[in-house]
Length: 407
Image 1 (cartoon, rainbow, N blue to C red):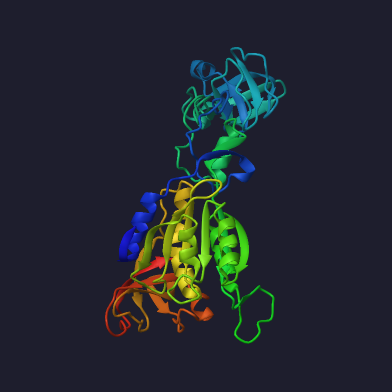
Image 2 (spheres, rainbow, N blue to C red; image 1 turned 45 degrees about the vertical axis):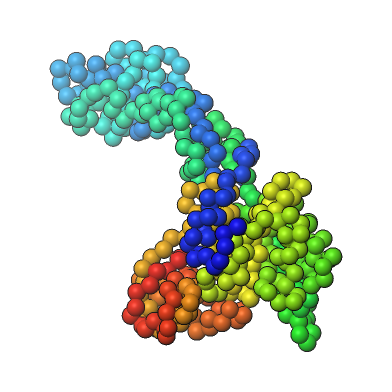
């Protein structure tokens, strides 16, 4: 265990050093979008498979054009090659073959003349060599293997599969991709005061909105999420719920992690074999954020115990859980992009800790949300950045430059 309060950046480094990508699985390409390649696939055939025309016109022999003593070259018309319907007979000297874009070049031909540079007269085609320009092999021809050679590596391991990457794999013979599997994540909120979303809270109760928020934050990063609901502040029931959560790759708990008489999550996790990695962060909001490794039926489980205040849970997920979920999926870049911005209004600081201020960033300007109390739901809605304000007394004035973590 790392003792004492940690700077969040140190906690991130320790976390990412601890986490390794999950084992690869084979996914059909139509399910692999957004996943990270775990190997380096190779092309099963070359592309294009044979020489193709890149222009509608006439397939000819460049030697026929070069040998003509006049700019007007008359050739005998001979059949057609269309996309998907190649002409299988070779082209002989003095012949021209009608050809479409994407169609295969017949044997004997080595260039294509655009149709606007030709005139058709019955069984003959007249080519205007002056309009064609240089008569050379390969003119308007896409050569076999010019895109991809058979056996060539297509994408390096670690590539994120987007539409273009999936198209490349499919076109080169792959129906599946070996990717790091999505982490299985359980979300568990704790506290006697919580009621499910949609219920009408009674006196002293609140809706368990954090569970909904955290589940969608995990889904947005590609995790397969199971919501375990609400566990009460009762030792046996809490222990049972936490045991169920340890059957996943990652367990995210929310609430019950401070030092009050009813904060039972940490001692219960330790009783289940959890090993502390770190206990607190030098951070506002989110100081009680805790990381453990615990044994589970399916293997080791990474447990993030987040505070119950909405902003604390939100910031803790952004700074810790999200990077871990990206690393588990094999992403090289696990942290949010940052940008230096200018405050348009004063922003509050904490005398002892980094304060992550929720804000709207537009270009290089950042406007803090009016609500910054960690228990206020308004403090987690409508922002697109976390402003990293170093510790100090008094607010930072408008015009100050700060680092924004872009969400």
